[in-house]
Image 1 (cartoon, helix red, strand yellow):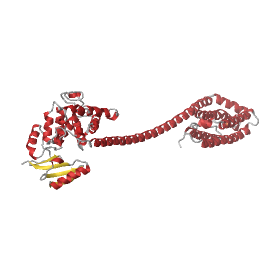
Image 2 (image 1 turned 180 degrees about the vertical axis):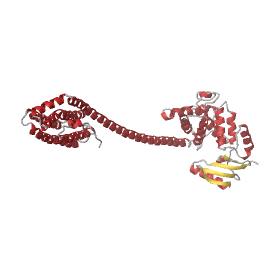
Image 3 (image 1 turned 60 degrees about the horizontal axis):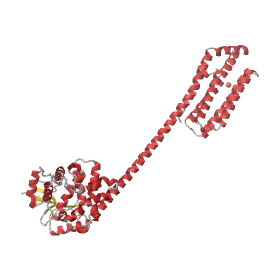
Length: 493
Ligand SMILES: [Fe+2]
């Protein structure tokens, strides 16, 4: 246990009578022990025990001391007064011990210790010292009167001044020491409490973080599920939203959009066709260009309805705005607000390019399934009019990086297109052989397969396609609901 010396022993406390000095030192030790236990908040039982020990020892010491005084000052006023002082001390100590304050109030604890220190120091330095000086003088042969006069002279002189200085120092020292130790103890307790609180806070933040991640994942999973439900409507291709968000996210990164904008694009890409839920099957089954003019407005209005469905949800507010503007045109000829160029939200401009591209490929735009180069040409032809040219360029760059190019009969066109747009052949290809990714619908017998992948896992590698393999791939696609990634190898010679 930590200890505190509120009453350090000093040689000036020595009276010169060995028995008395030894007992005084023992009393001071007990006092310091009591102060330490009080300062460091020992339990009540321990405090009581030490307090009782101090009181008992004081009684024992007073009896020993009084026996010595009695030998030299029998029945004199000196003896009587000294005994009265001892008795008063015992009575005060017992009163304090019996009081409830000692068990509960810190300020009372300091008060009691201050009393003990002051009383002991004053009594030893003034009263005991005086009697001891008289006794020692009598032992040297002086009469009691001569001895008293000599002691009086000594205490009026240097010794007296010294006594006053020591007394004053000890009183303030005791009070300050106790206060300091209590403050140090309190600070330590506060720091410990702070450490505990910080740890609890950390644990709470960790729990909240995990809960938040779970919630976010559940939220995104719910939106994905909803996107799948939308894709069950006629005219909306399975896996379309997945493709749109994959490519739109890459374009967003290319355009240096921030995390919030990317999140909005992700949600909008998954839900941009949600307004189609209220359109009739007959209208949805038509390609975009074949929708009669009379129905066109109704069809395009699904963007506004989609926004209205989602804008009440705080997390989807940003995405709902992108959905509203999916049919805006770069030159201002689009709907619903006729916005132009940069006034169209960047996310909407990106989604429009990617969604239209897949619409050209799958035939939902024109009614004809297009080759990749033809779809790219549609985008290129409509730069500045329908599409933001910077986004078309960024998207084509990403397509090139994916090696998403055309099959054999259109190879010369693609090679020319690459040259024009300064696109390079990637490291996966060699000078006399290129690897292309094609749509599963374009897979034909006789093609040299580099690999066919479901969920990024190869199903077959390095073989020639035949009708049997194609039938298996078609069946697998229907059973799994996932579009395979088909890569073919083609000679450039
Ligand atoms: Fe005494």
